[in-house]
Amino acid sequence: MNYFPYKPRKYQEKIVRVMEDALKHGRHLIMEAPAGSGKTICALAAALSFAKENEMGIIYLTRTNSQQKQAIKELKEMNVEGIRAVGVQGRANMCLLLEEIFSPNERYAGNEEVARLCRARKKKSIEALRGERVENRCHFFENFILLRDELKFERVMAAEELMDYGRKHRICAYEMNKMLARKADIIIAPYIYIFDEFLRESFLANFRYPPEESILIIDEAHNLPAFCRDLLSFSLSLHTIRGAIREAYDYGMNDSQLMHLMEKMEKIFEEMREKTQFSETDDAFLEENLLFSKLKKAGVDVAKLKDMGERLMTYGDIIADIKESRNMLPRSFVRSMGNFFLRWNGLNEKWVKLVEKEEDNIRIEAYCMDASLASYIINSFYASIHMSGTLQPLEEYRDSLGIDASTATFPSPFPEENRRVIYVDGISTRYYMDDEMVEKIGRGLEEICNSIDRNTLILFPSYLVLSRFKGKMSMRREIYTEERGEKQESIMGKLEDFKNHGGIFLSVMGGRLAEGIDFPSEELEMVIIVGIPYLPPSAKQQALQHYYDSKYGDGWRYVMEANAIRKMRQAIGRLIRSEEDRGVAIIMDERAKRFRKYIQMERARDAKDAAAMAKSFFGLKS
Image 1 (cartoon, one colour):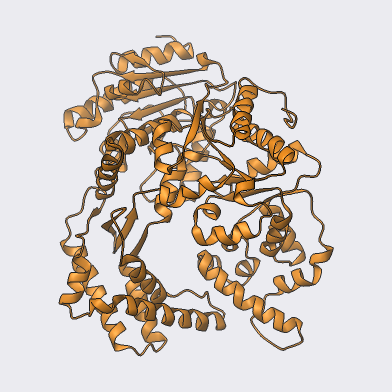
Image 2: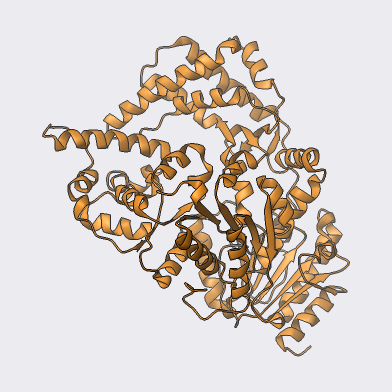
């Protein structure tokens, strides 16, 4: 606790000791502690003490760039002499040139495209610094080269602070970020910098501690298995194929064999869009050799697909270079098609091939089912700490990542009497398509919401289930609804009104309101979960479940139950974020009782009984 900057709260000293013990023995630790436990400061205090004593580095990973802010804030509070720390973000986030020369609509670009733009502009800037007359340079990079020896920074710097400094002095924030990373003892970065094979190589080259001399901390770790699976998955869409065809004509790609391939691919995708029988979630299995057999039938020499993929990549590189020279983003649809063919050929049983429909678009995807193909790198580190408020079942998380780890769970540091969780018997969304059950649940929601005047969030398993209730309940307060595909600014506007004026908000489990948004004090006092948030039937879900069945013998538990448990606990966690918060969570599904091992809850005979229990909690008259 030497570096702990605050008076320890309940359980924090014990959390630090458990972390210190894992570090002492060079083990991986999987730890669950509820929101408000102070996991960030505990992990940093334990890791920093051990790292300083043993001359090690620390890499602190977050799911998003915005989550870096808490770690940076805590490091500034700790103010440990001689320790340097920096938040790291990608070029696409930090490129001030991109911000300056492109409009917001044009600015979105992937790391690869920004890296290509950056390399070209830096090369021209170096030529300019030698006295040559060149256009399309990067003045931000030139100023960095000229002034880097004079730059002075605090010992702990956020990436956002470097961007503000870069804008003010017109100096490349990304190059400043790399410079500080080379001198840092602690780096705070997004997941992708460790789990993407190509980014990891350059990232670790800029950190002075090798993995075996580094401690890895993973925040909000419940997101990591899905992140790793998505990272190794890839797809090709009809929009990309059409973009590639336009690009080929616009840039004079005179290759009849490749043009034939692209045009036949367009027809195959259009046919799949019309004839595929999709699941409720708009996906379906793609027969193993269907794509190649259709191409062969269309007269494409499938034996030469690898060669054609490489040629598409070459043409795409040329097109991207031309676009960059014209002051355009060096994006190429032709290159994307080439990359797809090179990756598609040679997939094994750890990927499943799917076809997915999206309004006027369709895509085929190779979805990776084995997160450990990306997470194996964890085993290269001296030790790691994986922490979240919702990691149970811990063995599913451990097995998904393929690591040997000790586990620890801690209770909430806040008074138990501040929260009550109730499940309602005699109700189940297993039969939600039954009009009688829909009516019964609707009447139950009315009973609860109309008798308890508290800000309430009602969460449904999916937008499809939500639609069965929307506009059909008679509520005495304002109702807000999150719509499928609704833009972020629209939802945030409704949320602001809800917080300021009160009411009832209808949303979905796993949506933006169910996790990641804080509702202090009276902004939210009741959460109603309608049904168990099992994943909806889909080809992807079936494939993942089958894969876990074959690997661990319990696919349902690993895929369906683990996901549902975490979603429910995330939603319930919206209620209590401080010692002053109080709230009631009501689960409208009798099947919730099977999760008592993970969620402490009480039984209500029906919705009227649940309303009476909630009233009693809030001290309201019956």
